[in-house]
Length: 184
Image (tube, rainbow, N blue to C red):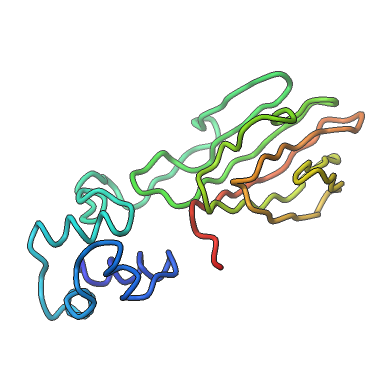
């Protein structure tokens, strides 16, 4: 079971066996044997593999996870409000979470941040946003990208950016941030 999980996590991070071997200090042949289920890693080896995957041993072995299916009802979402910007978190805060999904509402004139704010996302993160209602602008790399209902934008979320509602009606958009999965 751990072997299939190691392989899936390694591939999701776009790492070769050699890449993971360098990151973890575990040889590529040993990693291959673990992934194929030919051997079970010792706790020390599993801990090194987990570190190479940017996880704790508990996260790799799923020791700190409860249920494998989490349902969040509409009225139970985590909600944040700040200066006309409302965020509803659709994903639960699980260990090793590789993506976050949220719905954002911007009142007219409101923004998700300000020019000069540092990036909120980790290096390598990528964000995709789809406008559900109203019109918004993405400001990134000194450029403005105007978006209308149905439009989708994908960008490197580790760069300073923010969304602004320049319209006269409230705007809503769905955002998905994938952590550290950007590929070359």
